[in-house]
Length: 79
Length: 367
Image (cartoon, rainbow over all chains, first blue to last red; front, top):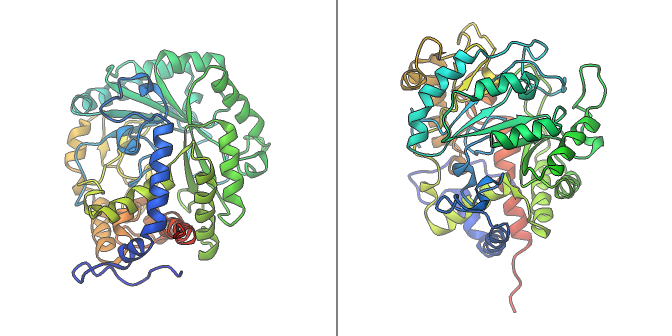
């Protein structure tokens, strides 16, 4: 599928990226479920239980990128 | 997300400008010179960030140059002013890591992230000052981390994102044993002027292939995939508007001399006739909190904020991305109020498209 190049119609209903995500719901739902399972297997802590022995790991959680702010942050992360 | 926060979640510190490697794609100027950060700079930063650490997690990322090139004694002196609530990280090329450094990391509870680009043949850009491959030295350092059971993250630069590469890389990092992995498609920035445009189909296929490889064995927390899934999950749950932070993290980079560059460390050390030296102040003369509070007065930052707003109204990927990075805007296009960059295309747009392509091609079959 070609990339979406039309402007984001912020005031005109659903934007094309959101529409494409929704159109791919079934495949994404399976992928998201597998990712959640993988996260549990990694025993990644959450912000509530970082005092556990996992607290010293390089890994943290689903919201890892906010919990351990480093270069692994997403927004405007440095490289 | 509107504007720039006055409270960062981390600060990047440059203990020395020196790097013992001379990677072809490096953006850093002055990396041949050993300009060390005085302890007074660390003391000033430590005093300023203490309140941030009291209200939430706060990290110091020791970058460089190569931070370990500062030596253990000097790095310890720079760490000393920071209170126990501050988390410390190093981003290192790993070549200097030995048993003594591992003991240092353990003693100071420093989290380690290494820079390595995959198997030896993919590290051709990571070379010593004598032009020799650095891979063996990188691996010796990583082996020391493993020997001491020190968990580590990895950052991997990809110069040629295309099909075939992603599966090889992911397999490699599974074997390497990193907990977290970030994939950085090479960028045109700083003193690296190599073009970074790639065929759209190749880059999208690279990311799609990475999802496939990761899905087979998702032991590694893979930054790009996890973030993409977080976004699409939020879209499907109808709360994507809550995903981006309310304000951009200013990510202050404190250079060796105490000067502060916000948002993009890659701008540190550069000068432009229109924008000056990109600094917003110096911690030796002005408290960091005061520098952050006045960030909007730095002319290029005001232009950048306008650029973020332009991204918001023109780009359908804004909810995923949050706006083109400052350094990419400047080094690719010479301004901060432009929108889409090659970095956007390589690392945001085609990433999301690759994830969606994978999901489209792997829809569960009805029974």
